[in-house]
Amino acid sequence: MTSPDDMRALGRRLAAVLRPGDLLVLNGALGTGKTTLVQGIGAGLGVRGPVTSPTFVIARVHPSLTDGPALVHADAYRLASPAEVDDLDLDASLETSVTVVEWGGGMAEGLAADRLEVSIALAGPGAGLADPGAGPGGPGGVPGGAGPDQEPRTVRMEGHGARWDTAPVPRA
Image (cartoon, rainbow, N blue to C red; front, side, top):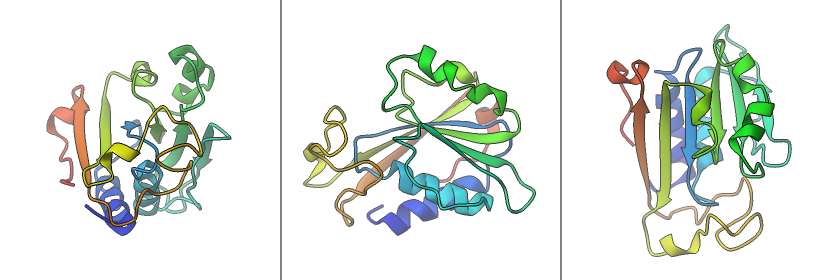
């Protein structure tokens, strides 16, 4: 997977297996394509957009335009603890929406026993440039931006809970 279009296409394929109540926890350094993947999920779910990084607003709700589930898109980057994720009340709409939490590792797993964890990493020569601790505007990119557009990425998806024991997860 090397381009933003590839990442969006993966998101659209993933959206085809998502249903209300699904929680996705996205992990990856700045600029690896987390928001780009969510743009593809939003397109596949047929939600009102545009889907942009929620880094500064923390969470956005994108209602469905097709009678499907809404997309709740959150960003835990600026949050200090799982308790702050809990304060967002994401669980209030969890059963009726598809909820995606960027930077959710170690923060959002408590929202649901069943979740799909998606890890994205740069795999090419610039792989060492994306520093997850650099903060917005630091080395590795800017919030919501893409890393070098044609840089190869690896995407790993790991399901947790009964929901993902049998759900078909698209290949990256």
